[in-house]
Length: 309
Image (cartoon, rainbow, N blue to C red; front, side, top):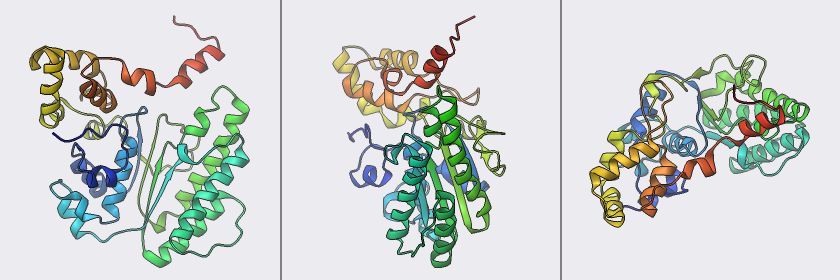
């Protein structure tokens, strides 16, 4: 019985440690083969970071990690690409737009150092991004850009309109530069909790395909009923014994508790975080709600005194 990857968002670690992995690589192959620029909105603790980590390993050609997975042949055959991956939520502490700009610049300089690129004294993150992309393209070819939690600086300040707008301007400049470097890019995938369009950070990135509510990719993150039954049968048997109920009863209770997500209006999904914790502890509880619910919505409602009709 494989160990559940609770809290593990790194595909390399997951595969090297032989943890349980629900194979989503067929869906990721569809993305790669049918387009080049994507955006996906999903709640926290729903598998976005693991998805980006998997894409990174695919584009870097780490074929040994894909043995037995549906993308194995593609990873072996394709030419590896340089990958720029940004986790905006992991940039460190920043309380002002200037500090956000400096945090992004530090991440870019770390990437440049790892790739042995020689940068000058660019003063803004968008200038540094353009220089990094151009030099990396000259050295290694078309580039893949993966961005996680793109909207976190805005959501963290959603009740402070002035500060949120300042953060938005930094991010909009950064993402606009990505669009201007399109000729150097092989693939772009951006994830977040919300979507700020039109006058927001994506006003210039009109080449992104929003797959958040498309039926074709409704199961790209999260677990379907079939995936639950095929991948977690040993854990379900174990939990049923510990809870002193039948597996049929446990399946019904799991469905009642956790099968409540649908982003395309057709596909029903289990939250991965809730399922793994529930099976590990052999107890039903509101795991996702207590750790992944979007508190910024509640805070915004309180700040603006919004009440239910």
